[in-house]
Image 1 (cartoon, protein in one colour):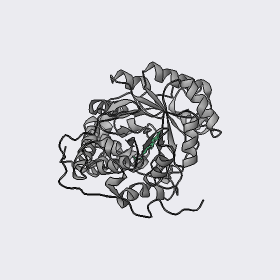
Image 2 (cartoon, rainbow, N blue to C red; image 1 turned 90 degrees about the vertical axis):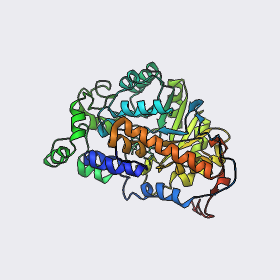
Image 3 (cartoon, protein in one colour; image 1 turned 120 degrees about the vertical axis):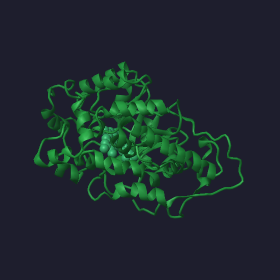
Length: 388
Ligand SMILES: Cc1cc2nc3c(=O)[nH]c(=O)nc-3n(C[C@H](O)[C@H](O)[C@H](O)COP(=O)(O)O)c2cc1C
């Protein structure tokens, strides 16, 4: 690997190595991409308070997320089609997370199945579900996750229908990719990716094909997806899913104080303040901007996690200092995966860890659990004056 010092370095290599269709799939937001952009630029507005001559020895980034020990408060977010970014991508990412000591979350829309990941890892991982109309299929998914020893169910609530991402439509995104003159020409320049794909059988949606009724081959999948997602989702349904699962649940996709309170009321164990990485409601505020209000409202009652826009350890520090008890990275680990497989995911985690550790020290802090808003310089108008 070339000398990698930032997550951005990994992104540059990733762009060279992975077909455009899948790079674009990860590197886009919905519609104008305003929310996608602001997820990162809003982090930049917050500055760090430099402290000196404070003993910075014995630093630790260790903490817990959902009662599980973690080497740092950074989990891998559920990312659909991860196995198209690199052959067997979910297995590679899960292994890197396990070795590093951070949670891995498997998406329903993964290429490797729940069983594939379980067979290739030794520790429990988290499983993410979209809320689907088909109760039998939901029940079977949960049974499979339970059998695979998954220790938490992440219920994503911000995708009852898809926010449009223009590039995916223009590229004709599919798994496996459709062979057109353009896509073949592009793939021929991405030979290491292609060799990897030729060497694996896992090229379809592993949790769905052969498991959902009527979906026996991938060609019937897109119509299945369009009709399967439950637009009637409400909090009663979430409460029902919690009962069906019977274990810990994390509600993912909260961006509003009222919704956060509702998640508390249905008995969720944690929430993820998230706008899906800017891929759903374009025009929504960034997660880091919404985080403090949500922490202030429900932080005493529920574990508040956040994602969307994290590209560095400094970002993790800012989120933790704002009151999050854990964070997730989506694109940051995908860049690493596409750049160099499992080693690339490890590299992304190492980069983030080093940045977090060093920045903590330079802020005069030795324990990630002790971070607070007093470590930050937050612009007076950061939360904004929005009239509802
Ligand atoms: C390519 C891609 C696919 C995603 N697929 C899913 C998914 O299947 N389920 C889900 O709950 N979230 C999904 N997300 C959202 C992530 O879990 C997470 O919320 C988001 O990536 C965080 O923003 P970040 O990429 O800026 O870190 C996806 C995100 C990306 C970039």
